[in-house]
Length: 137
Image (tube, helix red, strand yellow):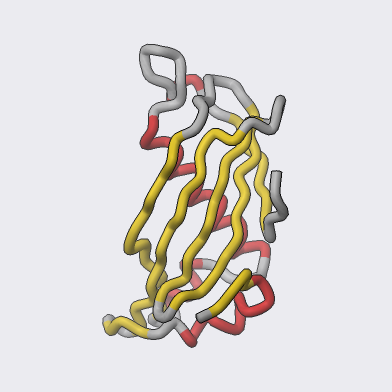
């Protein structure tokens, strides 16, 4: 497992699985979102707090590569790194099965900021993230 700026441990639930007993693909987006929310809270911010200030951080693109399946009741580690490209904040996220550290998915989640209804460069939240950027353009 490569280095990450944030890691979050979770466990799958049986109701997230399909008839083959594997976690349904759509549930991975939930895991990724929980990880981003936990990361934001760990730095003393929240999406709700930003929203109250007129700042909405919105997902504009998600690319997921599925590598190995998780099953019901399995523990996993959801990890993320963050970079900035122009107006986008890009979360590079990976999920590993905890028992063997097998990579289950890798994802790239692009987010943009809308401030008072207008697309922004995201400077309003940049200070919260600047220590975590893995690169910046």
